[in-house]
Length: 119
Image (cartoon, rainbow, N blue to C red; front, side, top):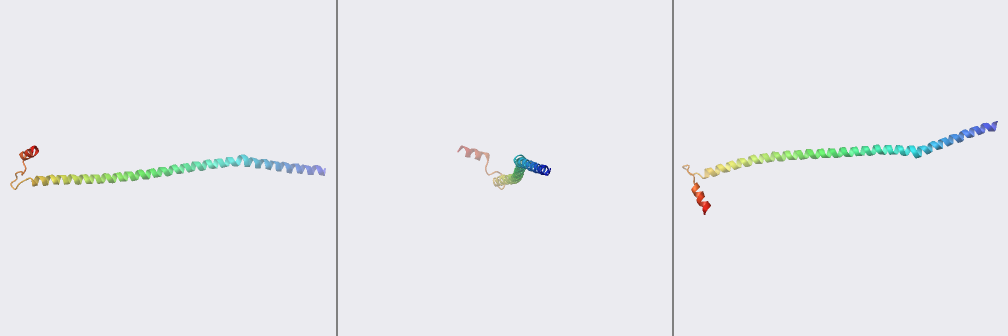
């Protein structure tokens, strides 16, 4: 009877060791790689999302810089156009006033211009 009880405990211990070995084998060969794959998939998705967000932020920064540059060039173009228009009007007035004599008659007449164009 004593031997029977001892063998029962041995069988229980061997069964427990076999169960532990099977669970360890399952954990090492099936569960851990699955957990690793899921963790890696989450990391890859997060990395891709962060990279896309970074690219979007850079594109927005570049678009803002381009818009600011375009606005600055537009402002400069408008100022130069106004200055050129004013200079052109002043030059026309200077030419017109220079072409007049003291009594208001033009120094160069259309006949003078015709003669110059023919010769």
